[in-house]
Figure 1 (cartoon, one colour):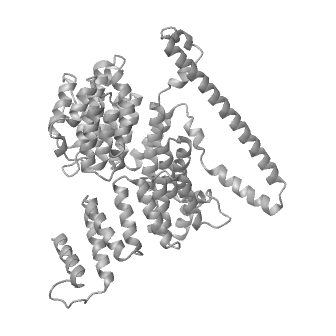
Figure 2 (figure 1 turned 90 degrees about the vertical axis):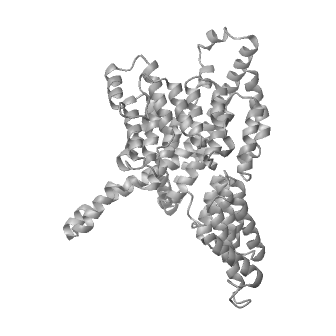
Figure 3 (figure 1 turned 30 degrees about the horizontal axis):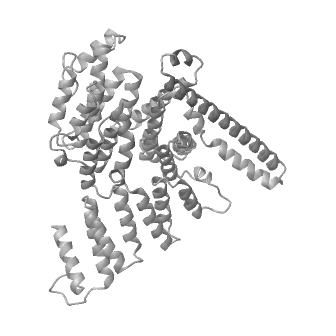
Length: 528
């Protein structure tokens, strides 16, 4: 095999600096050994063996400390193990070894955003901008990789307005590209370049099927879904009719709510004062710009024009109908990327919350249609199938025609429960058929919570049986552990799961520092 061949190269080069015993001793240069190390480390990293990869990389760096590619691969290894902070530190060191390398600069910016180091990312990306340029110039350059990375980092930090500003900037670029093509319609016909014209029309039809647009659209949908799901308890606590509800609470609970109301009022007042101060500063800045020379005024006008063309994420974040905004993106994804599973998974998330059950069924069917033996349907389909079945059983305001259509459409679909099926038993059979996959176990556990079977039954779906032997990739493990931490369970059960995951992924921070957090988060849950 390739692995055995490269291992033999590694052993022979390390011992005698030659590829095989039949070659002369010291027949190869020292740098050959470094690149064999790099290849073998890449092989181990690709196959999910981070410890073996890091051991080889440490050996290579000790041999040649200035080999930048070894540092980059080492950073990538930690990134794939979700240790984003360490990955950024290593890649930033590699960047400083060659400050003229644009590739390293770009990668380092993305790693900084992924680690939550937004200011560092902005500082590093400025290194390759002109002195007269600002970060807004990246919008004019249509640097979509930067906007996507920045938007995803702000989404992770909970800054939804900033995230939407950058994500909608990507959407704006595709709109501009589409509009720019209008100039070519008459030109192509006048110059009779019909073949190029047809190619351009085909390109236009699939323009928004580009991976950058799909990624931006899916992240925008994620933001709006998060905003829709975000509890409105703070607004309810500040409402004027809250006194009637307070009368039903204990004296201690009333004091706590009133204290929170005062804190929220003070926070709102502070925010209003900050906005007023910001408006005053903006007016002063405008007055200062107006008094500058004609050249400076022209530059300021250009900068202001650029700022005005950048989408206002704050306006989108305050949308009265977040699901309506998300629906606009879903329609574009389904229109321009109908063969991408992600398009229909986003539709599932939106239409299930809007209670548009026919559209939900349509998205389920389209997702199943894209599945194959090599690419089975994602487990999210099962969750939304259970949700659809639950809605048909419990919701009385669904139109009878809708119910009839759904029943007819799902007659020959074993993946969707029928009206006569017991949903809990249907979910249990799904779990039994997919015990080897942690991702499927997690979805079955979420279904148990959805069906009101309790936290213990949900935990049992994930952890009971041969949990340590089931197929668990890192993404599925992080998702499963994050879900389990939301359940009101004793700390020892969550700790047992953490230890098992830590044994499988020793480099992942998600499973290293969890024990201290659990004591605080689950103690309250166990008492309640």
